[in-house]
Length: 158
Image (cartoon, rainbow, N blue to C red; front, side, top):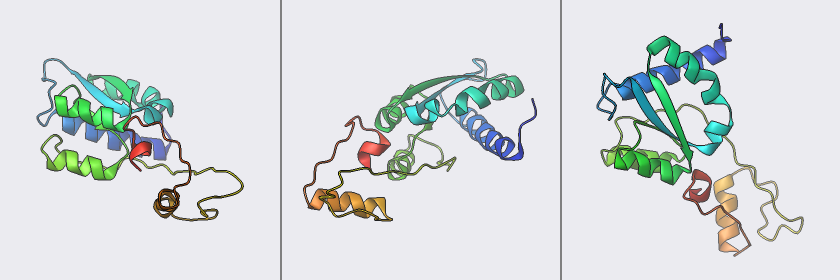
């Protein structure tokens, strides 16, 4: 199957990351030819893995099992040694994970944007704010109601 240029680049980047991590001290041995990826649900739900992992396995012979969960849970799986590769979206936590010796290296693979939706009355005064961090700080400082999944996900930590 021929991939468009952007998809080839993304596939190549992810293949390099997975291969590098699988061969650089991750828990999967060379004989096993399989790795476990702890990933966020949003990455799994995007369809990315369904698209690239069959190609990755065909080209490398390495089977990949994806365990989808919140960012905090995925990082915990990595800390316990239950995952060989971690795909999450909380850069400060990722950097700490690597600094503490649980990861080998951090790569930017993709990004997403927050969309903040609230009541028309705008109790935090954030309508039109271009900076999500400033908007969230305003919500907190004005004690405006805010709902989070509370599941240690990247969204929750933001």
